[in-house]
Image 1 (cartoon, rainbow, N blue to C red):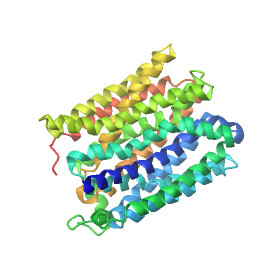
Image 2 (cartoon, one colour):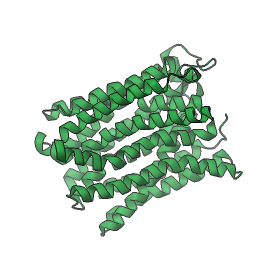
Image 3 (tube, rainbow, N blue to C red):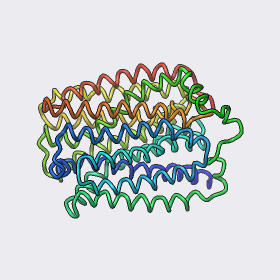
Image 4 (cartoon, rainbow, N blue to C red):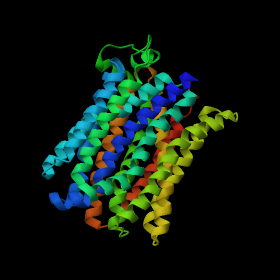
Length: 407
């Protein structure tokens, strides 16, 4: 019983860290109107703000995996969140477009350890059948953050101004770090923090990278992540702007309400992925078949985004987006599970490499969306592209699940 509490409690701590991270990511989109007015930028400039973060996040992920595979996960993971807290607080100090971009670049670098670190912890502590649920719990922080962000950030912004929203996030990150150090003191967790015998096979960084990218599974998961990550970033960063620009939701209460429902669907998707896999495998389906059912359902749901541009009634558009965001939640829980199996010896390195490329694709997509929405005044094309990326992810996911995973 104690082991179960410790195991899922660790996942919950990582969920809280991810929640804080995504509160910050959501905050920029939610207070975008104030930032644009005060710093004198348009949608294209806002796209650069989003993209600058993801570019540096990409570079950070390429290198952080090696550190996480070699040194203490407890201190590296916790320290990364503490550094994130400082960088988030700095965002509120931006006095120009250039300084805002600079602070978001710094934030991307220090935030890059969250996903590879959490994925390594889950892969060491949980058996394969439970990993989708473990991943779902910690990744659900993205939607929990998105879920509470509209009310929290818009409320704080209206009360103390947008700048102090980021100061508050920095303080919360510092409190989380203290909680992490206290919660991870148990001697029973020592095996989770450092590499176990047989994990390390190479000492050269170059050989480690080469051993990972030479695997066929790496490239299959690579296609998934460059399709799924941009989809998630699009929904998290641009939906507030879409609802204001195309649907005329200017009142904070209206916007907070629809975004809360939308990101609740994301949270349900995260948790449903692991629960459905567990349920299907207990009903005598193979793990491979269960994963395929989930990933095909996820891609079919995301494809609904392609219909948003055809919906005249805002209610229909909102329903379609809720379904698409739910599917995104399913995929975001599934793809880390596949990434964890690319190279069992170097989980964080593999996660950083595929995640970094996914973040790079996401950064490029943020710029494209900013440019297109500024030029055309519409989000029809980005929604259509998102739908096509779902089909690509489904095809790659089918190939990535050809074999039954091993314990």
